[in-house]
Length: 337
Ligand SMILES: NC(=O)c1ccc[n+]([C@@H]2O[C@H](COP(=O)([O-])OP(=O)(O)OC[C@H]3O[C@@H](n4cnc5c(N)ncnc54)[C@H](OP(=O)(O)O)[C@@H]3O)[C@@H](O)[C@H]2O)c1
Image 1 (cartoon, rainbow, N blue to C red):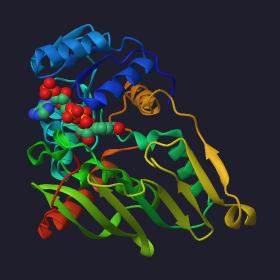
Image 2 (cartoon, rainbow, N blue to C red):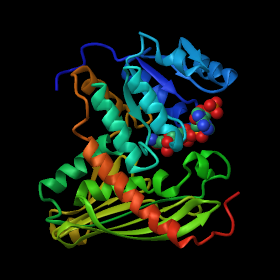
Image 3 (spheres, rainbow, N blue to C red):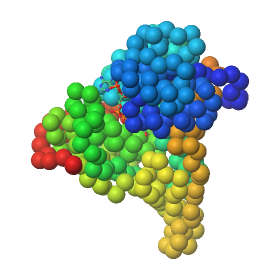
C-alpha cells in the first residue's frame, strides 16, 4: 500500500463512551477529519461536537448521511443498531467502519458485507486488536515459528461492569459474548484458525448473557479456552502456547503494549522470559484508523488484516456460543452495583 494521498472525512454515529476516546484518535490520524456527528438528542450531540471541534452536528440521520463532505462513517451505537445504521450509510454511498461486534448475528454481518459489495464501498469491523502493533508482532513471531506449532490459546475478558447502559439491555444487543467474548474468540481464530467444535456454558440475567466459559476445537486438535463476563474479574490476560514455548499477554490482553516471550532459549523458557513491547499511539485506535484510511484511499473494499471472511467466521462462532449459553437459561442472581 502507498501512503495516504488525500483526506478521508468522517461522520460519527453516536456520542457514547467509545466515541469519547475514538474521535480524538481519528483527529490524531488526520486533524479536522471528523466533519459531522449524529446522535438522537440535539443537546447531547451539540455538546459532543463542541467538545471535539466537529463543525456539523445533527439529530437527523439523513442530514448527516446526505452530506457531500462525508466520505466515511464510523458506527458506534449499541450493537442491535449496527446493521441498520451501517446499511443506511452504505446506501448513502459512504465507506463504513462499524464498532465491534459488527452486528448482533452473523446473518446481519453477511447482510452488511453484501450491501458494501453492491454499493462498491469499504466496510470493516473496528477490531482494533488486530492492528495493535504488539499483537501484530506476536502473531508474526508465531508465524515465524517462535513457539513451534501453536496448539492452545487461553484468553479472558471479564470485569464487573457498572449497571445501566446498553451493555445490560437485551433489546439493545447486550451480551458479554458479543461485547467482551469477541476479543478472546477473535484472538483464538487469528492464531489457531477457524473453530470447528464449540462447547459453551454460562449465565443469563434479564435475557443478557452475563458470563460464558467457552472451549473451541480448531483444526488438527488445537484448542482454545475463552472466558467473558460482565459480572466479575476473570484475570483479563492471554497466553498462546505451542510445541516450543509460549507467549504471555498480560492484562488487559486486547489492549496492552507488552508481552513476555517464554521461547527461543532455555533461559527464556525456564528462567526469565524475554520482554516484547510496542508503544501505544493515542488511545490505542490510531494504528487501525490509519490503516483504514490508507485502505479507503487506495480503493480497497475490505481490509486484508480483518476481512469479511474472518469477521463472519467469528460472528458465526459467537452465534453458536450464544445459542448454547442461552439454551441453558441459567439465571444469575444479582448484578454488580
Ligand atoms: N473498541 C472498543 O474499545 C470499544 C469499547 C467500548 C464499546 N465499544 C463498542 O462501541 C459500541 C457503543 O458502545 P458504547 O459503550 O459507546 O455505548 P454507549 O455509551 O451506550 O453509547 C451508545 C450511543 O449510541 C447512541 N444511540 C443511538 N441509537 C441508540 C439506541 N437505539 N439506543 C441507545 N443508544 C443509542 C446513544 O446516544 P443517544 O441516546 O443520544 O442517541 C449513545 O451515544 C458498542 O458496539 C460496543 O461494543 C467498543
